[in-house]
Length: 242
Image (cartoon, rainbow, N blue to C red; front, top):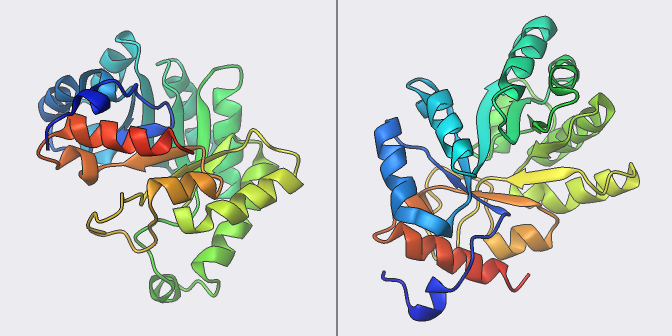
C-alpha cells in the first residue's frame, strides 16, 4: 500500500490511538518515524514497559504527542495511589488500571489535580463468556462490563476501556449518570477485511465510534501493514465521515 495524494492530505485523527506493541523501544521509535504526522496518539503497553517505556513516553511527549500508558495497574490502594501520582508527574494523557473499586478510587486520588486521565479496564477484548466462566465469573462479558462501568463512575475516574461491542451500552450508562464527558476507549478495532488476530469481541472503527466510543486503539492493522503511514491515513479518512 502506498499513500495516494488524497490520503496524504488526511490529518491525524485525535481519536485514533496507535498501539506500539513492539519488542523494543528502538522498534517503536522507528515506527513512529515512519508514521510521521499520520498519528499523534500512541499507546505504550507492558511489552515496552519491560524495557524503557517511560523513556519513550517522555520522548513522545517532548515531541508534542499524546501518550496512553496501558499498564493496567492492580495492587493495594496505597500502592496504586502512589504509582498513579508518580506517573501523573510525567505529563502523559491516559493511564489504565484494573476496574476494581478500590484500585480505581486510589488511582483517582493519585492523579487528582493533574491532566492524566484514568481508565478502568473492564473485560479484556480477548475474553469470551467461556473464559469468564473458567475464571469463576457468573456474568456474561456484557453484564460484567456494565457492573464495572457503574463502579468506575462511582469511583470518579475519567472513563473505561471496553470492547466495541459494549460501547453503546457504556455510553448509555454514562449519560444516565450525567457523565457525557466519560471516555470510552475501545481496543479490538479492526478495519473491514482485517484479520481478527486474538480479538474475540471486535468491530470496525466506524461502528465503534457510531456506538459511542471516544477513542479507538488500533495495533496490527497499522503496525504490521506494508505501509503503516498509508494504513493510518486510510483509517483516519474513514473516521472523518463519522
